[in-house]
Length: 179
Image (cartoon, rainbow, N blue to C red; front, side, top):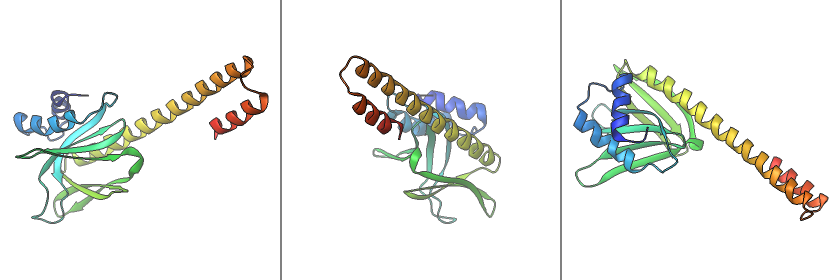
């Protein structure tokens, strides 16, 4: 997914805050769309109540998305947008907690703990989808790193075969690549 429309349709299809007003949802998702990089793809998205600290204190509704690189969140303000992100490598734990009748998705990262209010029906499904997508995204990047190492080794072997590297230089470079 890359567009606000695709994010909205994903939420409609999965039941993630699907009862929300289309125009309002599109405004929230457009903040995320605007901040995507060219090589970034949204894996999961939803809308929730941001940073709940008490029954009356929160930062309003935000759009959230997990991409292949980071967890992003955005809100359309009267003047400008509020956009935040957490790199996947900085995310430590995702869990659901209950406060009275509310389900809170807690995301613990190097930046602290984020609490997102979700409906009781959607919370377990969103948590499962986030965990599954994080696992896939991190596995894919690990596979790409391994492929990259193999390509580097092949290139260094070519340089060795061409006589541009000594056997000792090749061995040292090979050890560095494989670390």
